[in-house]
Image (cartoon, rainbow, N blue to C red; front, side):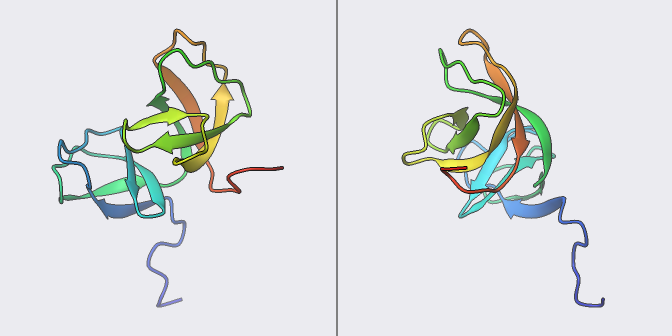
Amino acid sequence: MKNCIRPDGRSIPLAVPYSGGVTAGQGVLVGALFGVAQTDGAQGQVVECAMVGEFELPKQPSLAISVGDRVFWDNTNRRITTTATNNFHVGFCTMTSAASDATVRVLLERGPPAGA
């Protein structure tokens, strides 16, 4: 099909919205698109971002997250949380993360922000 730009949609280029830029492996939220930066980039620079897969991302301190929990991106603090209000649904926890852990494993999956 000649009009298909990215057949698998596994990654797309996004302009870095953050004043401090991003490093490879950090989450990036642009509008309703969330991905994980594959390279470092300064604010405004376009970087390729993974849109699917399982990633280890920073999480809210002192928060335990269980396998299967819906997780959300806190764009203000640039980390994962389980709080839906004012945050963006990005996927599901794939490995239990203790309150003392700094990161959580997340399967990127766009789905409903609440409910089954």
